[in-house]
Image (cartoon, rainbow, N blue to C red):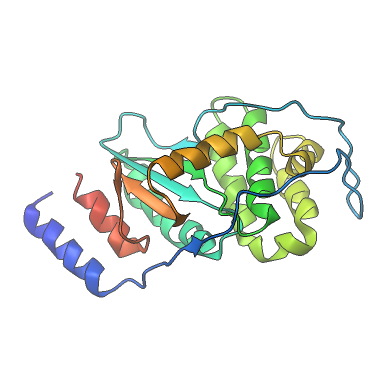
Length: 228
């Protein structure tokens, strides 16, 4: 891209776009007390084995010239705004054209217990799908959970179960994974990567390894264009 276009985008980003602020604070908490989920949803799949590693969920080609890495918390309202309003623009404008690989990392602040539980459910979805479709299914599930974020505190297990039922996965396994958090080591590893990179709020976004000062669309667009 020409330098004049880069400068233009930077100026526009500075004066407009409605910057998305972030979720701060909290502590590294959240735990499970039993294998069984009680209440309106009855799922008991027994104890689920802990999982220590999974590939990073990603959209776009691995050899794309630009890598966008995003650290998010499923219970953070600012992450909801970013996922529903900004991410689709990154995908349509850059990922679908092969110019960006978009990588997702969990970073539970945590805002609530669902910071961890929803993240574990999403990783359960990812782990059950074959290599050719697991990323697409993960991101679709993630988007649907963000759309229902405000209902998680009151009806979280049912939401995770019902959303998983729209995919080719075991919906009870997904709900039970939210309860037992067998993917917590994976999520903790993501979180530690974020800490090592200086992340202290969500969403936090990196473009080719450089932290972006904001997560509104114009700021993100400017950062990506500067790398193309």
